[in-house]
Image (tube, rainbow, N blue to C red; front, side, top):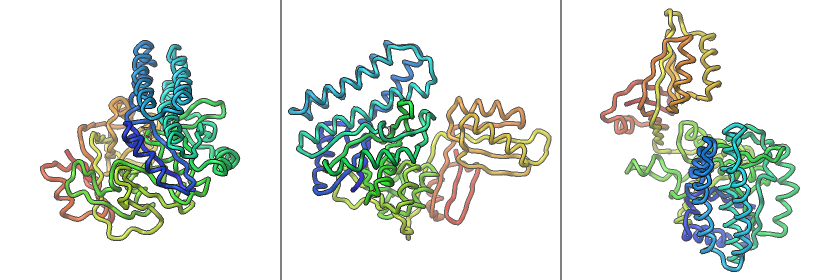
Length: 420
Ligand code: ASP
Ligand code: MG
């Protein structure tokens, strides 16, 4: 059994859906579990629906949702003939559930409503795919992953209940492969023991693919993307970006940690635990080799560049020239936890602590205000955090031309530079 994960870009038009269908058809004689994301930018569009709804603008929320409905219904019309009516009925059931909610007044947390509404993106896209595959005579079935993946109620970043999920997969998913070649399900979403929908964090579909592969002892996971392979830097910004053919799990975890948007960071552990290889392949050129991620140690890696924009550097300086010791650092970390801000880099001196964060304005302001009880706080915005793994002097130079360097940190493997 293999797991395929298709991202939103692989299904954001009729042609792309057809292309995805061709890839699935050409994996004949294989049992495949397909994990799919929401179509194109649907998740962002659903976020706008949530925002309007939560601000009490129900009409606006319904209008925004109407656009999402139309785009899915249009696509379905072009992709299905024989199965169209049945497929449309299923979409309409999902619509009704959301619209019912959108007519209400919010009485619970924002995050709760976020998950109840946003989860429909994956339900819609997977339902269309399943019906389209049937149209192609692929022996496929569809599964509501919320009946299978059980999570806690930490909405928007829900944690997996592995025991229950394992049990459900063994009793309800494995047997499906006796009857079907392809099982289509949703990434990114799950449900609590009270049947409330949850989400696993943005871009979480990769993680779902890894959960299934781990529990089903999959042969491999393939993530189909709109790039040829994992690249050494962002090809849109760097002409010298090169393809990386093989990476170790460890290297990918490091890259994700530093902010490379290759694969959702939680994806690797479930695969590494069972030694399941992960292939990153291009859905536009499926014949290209792509990247293989496995336990094998990667040799001769080129410098790998990760750039994070919109960074903020905060200087926490002791008010009375006392050293920065355990207690104030502990207090500071309590504040970080409270506002849910995780530093991307930290550095100590005798009387100051420097921390670099993604600049979520509201969080950062909250953090700075809270910390100013204990420290003198200075905030510097609009910075870039450059990370280079396996750095060479020339790569550093090239990426820092005309920049002012505010902080530099180095290990034998990795250099990080904050600059403006
Ligand atoms: N559709 C979700 C998102 O855009 C999950 C995913 O794409 O993996 O974040
Ligand atoms: Mg995605």
